[in-house]
Every structure is written in structure tokens, then in C-alpha cells.
Length: 546
Image 1 (spheres, rainbow, N blue to C red):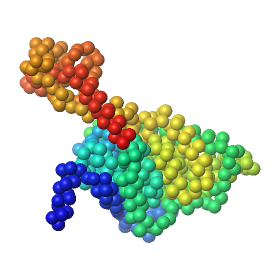
Image 2 (spheres, rainbow, N blue to C red):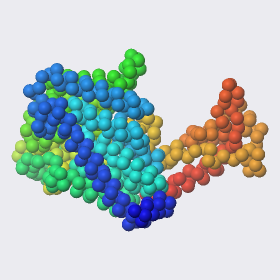
Image 3 (cartoon, rainbow, N blue to C red):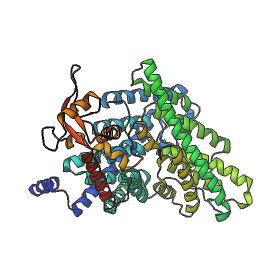
């Protein structure tokens, strides 16, 4: 025990060696895999209990035989419970998910809010178990990030190691959710860390493999979806059709994202106008979802069952069209109603159904030169999901690993590339980055945009009574003109002042009290601000190219 305590003390004070870090990454992979597995099994357990079904994957068929009032009651009560959890355990009543993990990686030294994260996991669990229409991967990613944050605090890890361990946790959660180790590792690098540093790849790959092993111990080495045998591809002749499918999928992805944002804005306006308690918002969303489920029970939960039906061609053309429309509405209500869950699985399902509808038309027009409609469902699944996530590489790999079909890669890649290209022009690159932009968190523009918000002006203060400090009289004059910055502010607030005033320095003040002028504590020099930004940019570049 003494040796263990000594090792922990060494890691906390001096940081882990490379071998130690890989062992910690392995531990993170196991914990992330267990979190994903536990989350999935818990959803199944809740659905078995409240819907009295023995097979949650076919719940959309079983629910037709349930009383309509039971579907409404379960979803409404689930929404109310979600609202109460978020009301009491989060400061803003909002579920944390992938966007918050991206923010943590970029702005919070690889850490996330632990209390709100645990509450969000329970809220999403109840949402998905009681009729919400969303995915489980987003909550799993954030739950894994919460575990990473706890371990990083225990280790007293620096920012670089914290971000790498965050990537390990995310990779393990995704790979365990999808039984997709390659895609899990790439997803962590492409979406969360947003770089492909060599130093981060080895521990993230170790964690991703560990997460997959945990999943396969329970579920076996099986792909999530079983494809129809007739996924033939007529190669060059069909490429134009898959290019059109890519453009079509990009538009579908845009409609899905805008529907969610519209419903979120509408819900906030209604909540403000009616002065409704925020814990009732998810309950009302749940009631609406319950009413929809009485006619279209396929919206309940994650929706892997209906996605599998689309990939195997068990859905007719008009059914696919209607299901896409209804699913988009249901997902928008779920997420706009602040219930919880992620957007990945819905994007896969909507993509598969819209791709199948497109494929039925394409193969019907030119049957002699076409393969199967289910191949279009497969390509559409990847194309819509890639456009929503802004992750063409990892999504393409996830589609391959979910289905085990590597022979149709060209069709999927063509559709994915074009859908991502068109949707990234219509939103801030992805659903997650657009979520952050709507909160005035500018991660999508790159480090040069968000690093300013991480640097406090108080750390660069020069006292006015020192030889190289600002002139006290000039500082007082600038304060009277309103050209000053508060002590706790960051450079993203200070830099526009330099541009506006053209001054060499601006005063740093403490907030005013009782109507008095703010108290000058020192000055922020433009050259100091530029040096700090340059050091931060150099540190980011060094991390990304390490």
C-alpha cells in the first residue's frame, strides 16, 4: 500500500511517465466502456419495466398493442422527472452532452462540470427509457468525460494530459456504444480534441480497444446492424446517384438541425412568455411525444430497430418518407423540450430511412444499372450522421464497423463527403459547434477565436505606481470615457477596446460601488495582451503537432 500511495503522489506532483500514462489510459478505457455498457443496459431495464416488453430493440412493434393513455402517461411522467432532476441539479436546467465536452476540451483544460454531468446522465437515461426520441451516445460521451474529470482531479493532471485523458474516455464510450474501436478513436480526435496529435493517438487507441473489449464481453463480437445480402453496387454507373444522395442527405441533416434549434428557441420563448417553471418544459415535451407515439411508436427511444428495418429494406417508400418527417419532429421536441439524449442515433435512423426512400426512386428509374435500395440506405445513414456531427472520417468508419460491410466504401464516402460539404456551409460546421455558437462560445473558428476567452486580464496587470505602468491621470481619464476593463475579464473583451481607442494601454478596474467611479487597479498594455495570445497559440500548436 505504501508503494501505491508513493506512486500516486509521484503522478500528482511530477506527472505520469509515458508507460504510466498508457496504463491510466487503459483504466480510462475500462471505465468508459463500463459506463457505456451500464447506460445501455439501464435504458433496456427501464423500457422493460415501463412498457412490459422482453425485447427493447423491437419496442416499436410491441408498443402498438399498448393502451394509448399508457404511452402518454409514461412519457409525461418521465419528462416531469427529467425536469425536476435538471431543475435541482443544474444551474440552467439544460442537459450536458457532446457540445459541452468539446467546450471542456477547448476552454476548460479538458474538464467538464461533474455535478451537472451526473444529473444529465440520469436525465438522459430517464428520457430514453420513457419515450424520449434521442440517442444514447451523446450522454455516454459526457458521462465518460465526467469520469475523466474525476481522475484528472485526482492526478492533478495538467491541461495537455487532461485533454488526452478526455479523449481516451470519449473514445472508450463511443467504441463501447457502437462496438467500433477504430471509429471511437478517430471520433475522439476529430470531434472532441479537434486535432490528430501523434502523442495522443496511442493512449486513445488503447482506451478505445479497452472499451470495445468491455462491450464484446457482454454482447459478443457482433455488428450493431445486420444488412440485407443484396447490397450490390454497380460501381461507376451509380456514382452520380450517390453524389445526388450526398447533396440530398446534407439538406436532410440541415433540416434536422434547424428543426432542433427552432424548437429550442420556441420552447424558450414560450417558457418566458408564460412564466412556466422550467421543470414543466420536459413534461410538456414528454406529453407531446407520448401523443405522437400512439400513432408512430417507432419514435420511442434510441430507434435502432427502425434503422435496422430500413437497412434491410423492410420499409416501404411512403412509410420511409412519413417516418423521416415524424422522427425529425420527435427529435426536435425531445431536444427542444430540454429532455436529454443525443443526436447521433436519430441522425443514423433518419439517414437510413431517407436514403432508402431515395434508393427506391433511383433503382426504380434505372433498374438495369442499379444495385439495391438498401445500399442507398447505408450510404444515407452515414451521410446524414456525418453532416450532423461534422465528422466525415469517424462517421464513415462507424458505418463500416456497425454493418461489417467494407465492400461498399466508395458509395458511402462519396455521399458522406458531399453531405458534409453542403451542410457545413449552412450551419457552423456541425450540430455541436452550432450549439456552442448559439451560446456565444466561438470554438468553430479555431484557437485564434476562443483562446482570448481563456486569458484573464488580471494576470497581466501593471500597477500604475511602477515605472513601466500606466500613467495614473491618463487611466482616470480613460475610466471617465468608459474605456476600461474589469479585473476579472478576459482578453476577448479587452482586445476590441484596443481597436476602438487606439490606446497603448487601458485601465483595469474593480467594479464600481454605490454609483462611484470604478477603482483603478492598474493597466493592461496592448503588447502584453499580444504576447499572452502568442504564447497561448504557440502552446496549442505545440500540442497539436506533438
